[in-house]
Image (cartoon, rainbow, N blue to C red; front, side, top):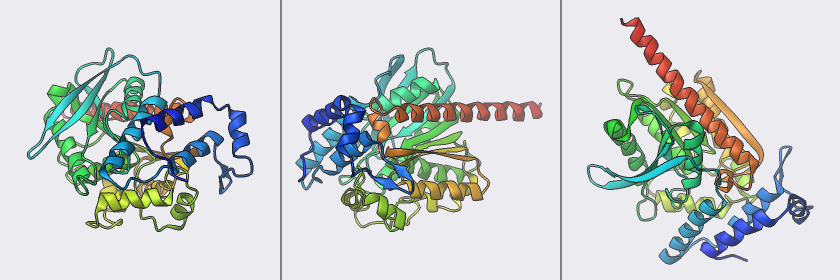
Length: 365
């Protein structure tokens, strides 16, 4: 039986998670608790994952808009609550043939000419928005003490591949050209994102590192990124078959809608971990994964490829979690730990970049 995605359903989903004690959640999944290679899913995560995959995939524009509203509303309702001490304003990003919008977050007391986090939201290139990801971005900006720019890139099916890729790449260029307006140091920009947004961050890094004469990313901070999503690997199929938020039908719907038959799943803009040349110059990279996420095998593949190339990379897994748990920040303590790790990484990357520049300048005096 499928459920209709709408803002009322988002409210019910958030309330059910918040009002279900851990003991009751465990009873609800007794005998049906998902397991994988010694991992056991968190009962609340299993309930949330099954709830999402029970939603009917939209078959019309009106239903797609309702699905997007559901996704955004759930992110705002179930997201982090401790997000004070950060101001935000929406800004226009005029590009050569279009204009994007973005939201600039600034923690209280942040210094001018400081580092920036350039963030891309998730949602399979079909769902998601700056508004829906506001709690995550506010929390990450606050904990890192850095400005954060969240980009409203174009979505499929209205704008299929390569539109999101073009928007992500052009966002990097725009930030570099408008550093003074943003009040940031263009040499200390960390790329970040989750899910599809993590994939876009990696695509941008692949592109920028191919031009080493230009300013380079200070680092990569990725949460369950779409690094290699072929939907053909054995472990990918097994995890998708568990139907925990990213089920088989949802994954194929995302891919079909985004690619529109224009590009292969093995293309480096859709599976950026396969861009072997680009990985040679990756900045320090943090990858967070969830144990019951079909994107985990691709993220582990990225970790292994970067390690083989002697790049600085760290992967931390949350073994009992499902894909998207950061968007349910007020319900999972793992989400707070995850955003803390992302914040620590971007701080370390920007500090290392600053120290390296100062050392280089000292050597030239």
